[in-house]
Image (tube, helix red, strand yellow):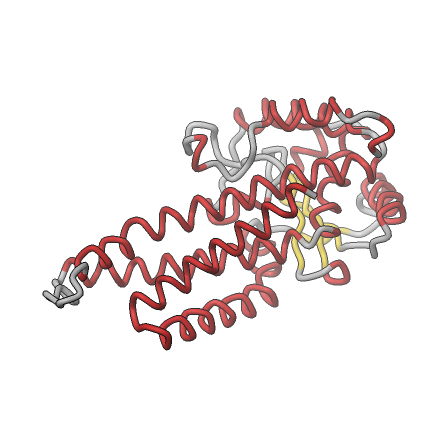
Length: 284
């Protein structure tokens, strides 16, 4: 419940930041325009983001006769979780990883790389798939879409503000003062704040998916063991991926040196493993 409350607060902060930017640009009308802009972006991402990201990684839908073991695991876990069967996709990559996508449980997909199928045993694979089904069950895809699109709107406004600053647009000596300070806030502070909030949301949802996944699979140690293997292997075989979609994967697909800890889309693997190992049987 704690992670869910954090997510609501973070989304509220992100929306509030967007409204503040709208008000700074054009008063009350600017707030309305900023909110409408975010809603339109969310609608587009909600309907099309799954197809875009699957195509981005060359994911190919597979059927039961092609991956019988995976289908058996997914069917069993979906029954436990009370979820409809998602579509299964295979990503042609040796880097071990997985993600879930789709606008709701009835239109969901789970994508696995070739690498993860070769690396993990059945118990560990159950933990990973349970984690991904948890994202579907917890509506994390929708949450991530909302966060990403609001942050994206803020980034667009920030780009416009930087353009204005370069060419001296909006540098007025108004009696209220602060014209330049507002421009600097829009160009520098706002996008950094939006990014940090978005990343905090992503990390909170990962913790929630770990705990929910452990309850679905009935075995937190399977997921803990999988995360340990994935951290080691993914750091040595980084995936060619877009940083904008890194938050979707069960472990960061980019090399560990790419981002500072503060700007990481995922919580530290060590902390995730320790939390899973501390879960008592009565918890799930």
